[in-house]
Image (tube, rainbow, N blue to C red; front, side, top):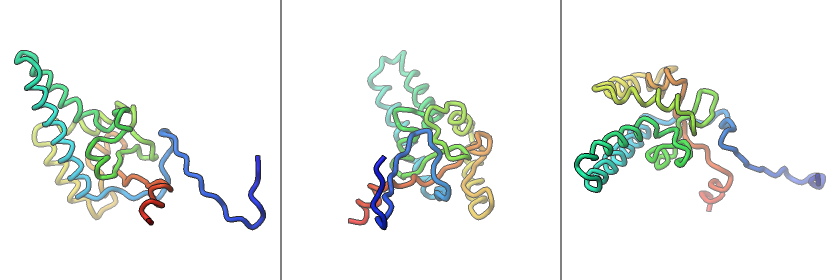
Length: 167
């Protein structure tokens, strides 16, 4: 393997496999960022449901509702979205396990953290918890996160994104 000349600055290489843990010190997502991401996900889910209701025959329109709910429950684990929901991608945040691994394909953790949101009025409880925990040690963790042993973090930038932002 070739070595760098003496005195040459070290070269930073950023290679991250989807299963590698995220770097320590990556910040947690703010309350506002999480709420905006959730609103985006709700719009995507409702839009898909409305579209499917018009496309499918009337007897099969209930499938649209089921698919919409399935997206909301599994949105953070979907491999074709890279383990981020549409809203989280837009807001550059990601749900990860407590040790920093993405939820891509981790159906159990994704379902546990999001299924509680399908219980009537429970999203309001989760919203209240996020607000009241904003300055405490459980900052940014709702009950679904506690039960699934997950957290929501800011998406770490790559070296290429840092270079682009500097231009």
